[in-house]
Length: 68
Image (cartoon, rainbow, N blue to C red):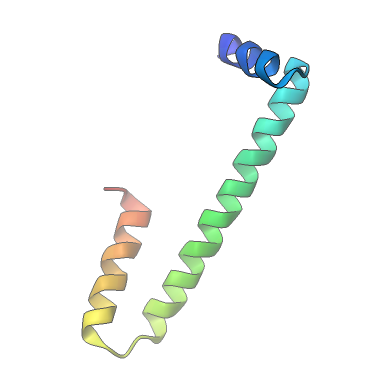
């Protein structure tokens, strides 16, 4: 892990600590985007009245939750 951090910090020309902070910020932003997408999809699923759309949304929620 340390080698990866060192390589990233060299590539970005920042300190290892700065690279870690940047990576954590990126990870938090990505998590928040995935969470928002999941909640929006869950809301659409809950409100859906079309059986075909409900099935598709259920499958997409399952993929987001369990992978695959």
